[in-house]
Length: 263
Ligand code: HPA
Image (cartoon, rainbow, N blue to C red):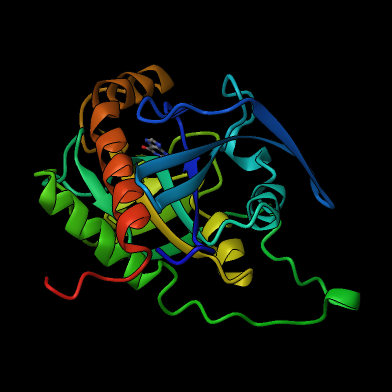
């Protein structure tokens, strides 16, 4: 593999570690935006086929930070400073479509940002300068293709495309918002995908995200939404996400970030 490749895994709700890897001690990384706790591990497929992996629980240990208070800039800066080149992120989402149910995994390819109060950029003018980053295709296409291949190899159901609406939270949506987002082309709705993906792009990191559907969006089913339901469904489907992550780790350890030409 290319020896500079390093994978960052950002675990969302319900994903606080990865059973498939044994991590070394927790590490604290200081950045100009704040300190971040991560776990680091090295995966070894065979002699010369190794991959460094850094795991970062997005909401902090014990899920102590709500989506609108997450320090997204510190998280992404910390991964970059640790030498991470590729990011695999997981997020819990509600479905905006009746034909997409709890337990399904969606590999995102687009987002729509309806958040309001976050820090969206590293480039605030002054010394950092003014920078307008291309965001036409925000999720890295080659990493997406590798994940699609891995899912196929492991017989995991994965919707290969999906548009993610990111809301401010921490409240869930109204039924009207869910209807509107669905009509506007959204597939899933969550609270944490933005600005994470934007910031990763700004620092030149190859970023992909898999969303796990934990519930139908507000108004698409008869039951009120609860955080407990989100946790429960995440817990019940954690093995699938872990399997996908392990497949990705093995692939990157053996082949690097290149797309397999024999596909
Ligand atoms: N809306 C927003 N975020 C979510 C949802 C939802 O329905 N489910 C899990 N995260």
